[in-house]
Length: 82
Image 1 (cartoon, rainbow, N blue to C red):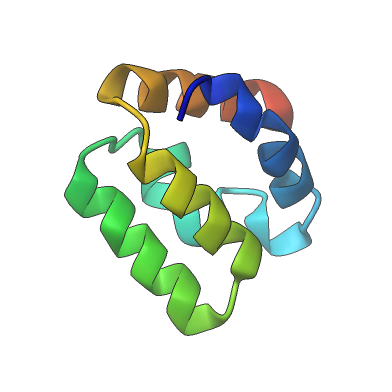
Image 2 (image 1 turned 180 degrees about the vertical axis):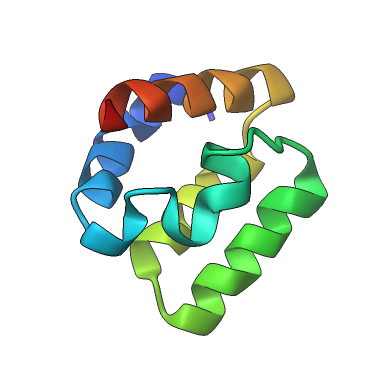
């Protein structure tokens, strides 16, 4: 991903879904800050199993990001939900 800020509109939309207040299927990434590939892939599988298309899209994009970018995304999430 060229710029992790490109994911911001998706995070905003994701935060508006009531069950995603604490990160939904992406909780261990967004809330807990686990930025390793294994954690993101786990989130992706959970989102797929739940049929959460927006979470799937976000997780797929996050997998393209560096760990530094992923940390920035977690920070953006905290700003979005505050």
